[in-house]
Image (cartoon, rainbow, N blue to C red):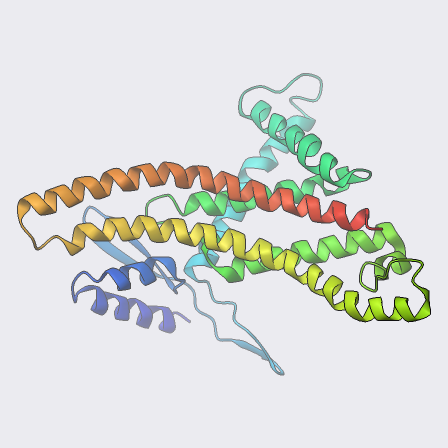
Length: 302
């Protein structure tokens, strides 16, 4: 089961010993892999992750192996459960008859903000039914973003397969919500659309022109969600690692040049890391807000 991961770890160790390579360092830390790397007291540990044989179901192949990004995705899900399940229980028992305090109070304020300013404002009638889903999206994406900023962490949202899966789920939720609100006939009018009063010939012509446009419009919304989150997270980490890589690139020069590059690199990276912290919150918020906007648009389609 661990043979593939162990072989990958051996290959990584052999390549790492060949010397500093900026391109290799970037691809190694940004791309997915079947192992984790941890440095403790100057000693680098390569931890293989569970590898399973693929499951073949006819033409479909399912690989249930745990990779680096899957590991941090599951860790983000665990953090969501570990934080919010105790808060939810406390709200029903300890704070059932009084206002919450401390961390629970901060979480209640955030939940109320999302419910009132994001969900209700963008969806309208029946919005409260989607508050749980949109809040789950926000915190799940936020934790994945933040885990990429901790030492030895990886950003699962820097993988377009992860952001694509999130966008696909949002697409399904959006389309189902539209069908439930508009009915089957009303939902089909969001695809086969023609302005009224054009006559049979004009209506047929407009259907031929607008139907592909409306159908592609449905697909571009989740695609935009996927690319926006993926590109922003990947670009930020690429910039941070590139600036850090300058230290190794100039390590063989004079002490003055090496020291100057090191100080400049660390200073720029420190500033960018603060910006990345802001981006982690911003991108989670944008994904959640646009989900609410898309649900509201299809429910109020004319």
